[in-house]
Image (tube, rainbow, N blue to C red; front, side, top):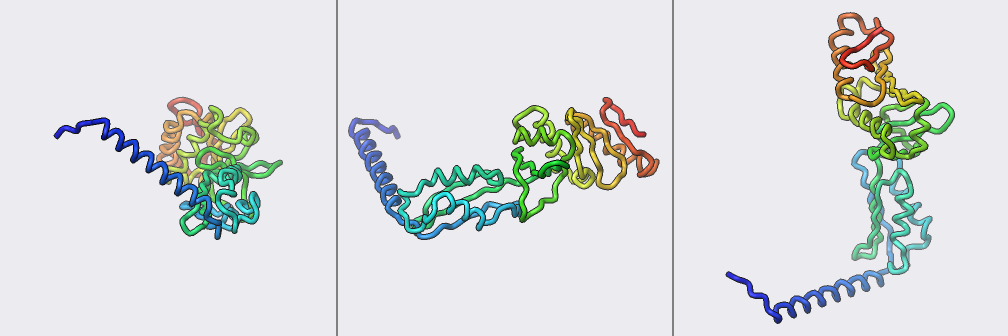
Length: 254
C-alpha cells in the first residue's frame, strides 16, 4: 500500500504540530502557576555512601533560595539551585522538577569514593569514581585504598585525576586493584613519591613492592601474583623486605 503525500496531508500535519505546541505551552504555563507545597529529596545512593543525607541536601536547597514553600514555580530558579548543588564535590549530578501535586522534587546523585588521599601536613581527601577529588566528611569514613606520599599534593592541585596523563595512569591502577578481589585484599596503600613512582604497601605480607610508574599494570601485577603464590610459600612470607617490579620480565626480591 502506497502512502500519498498531498498538500492537504501537509496542512493536517502542520495543524497537529501547532496544536501540540499550544498544549505544551499551556501545560508549561499551568505548571508555572502551581505553588510549591513541599520539597522532597531523592538521594540516589546505591553504594551506601553516607557523605550526605537528605537533610543535608535539603539545607543546601533552602539556603540558596529561602522560603520556597508557597512560591509559584515560575518564581523559583531551578537551574540556579541545581548549579549550587553540583558545585558541591560530593554531588555528581542534580535535577530539580515539580510534580503534579505541587512538590519540588530534588533528585541528587552522589559520587562514590574509590581511594583516600592522606597527607601529613594537610587535610585528607577522597578520589571519586570519576576521578574527582572531594573533601572528607565528618559524618562518614569510607574504607577504601589509601594513597599517600609527596605526589598527593600534585593530585590535590589538579582536582581530578583525569585532568593529566599521570593521573589517568594512577586512576587506571586504582580501578584495576578495586576490580580484582585478590588485589583488593592484598594492596592496602599506594605510596607515591614526588616523581610519581608507586610503592605498594601490602595488607598481609611485610615487603614493600616497588611498582614504579603506573604503566604496564596488568603485566606487573601478573608477575607479582606469581611471586606471591609460588615463591613466598616456599621461601617464607617474611624472608624478603623489598620486591621490585620495575625491570621488564622479572621480579627482583631482596
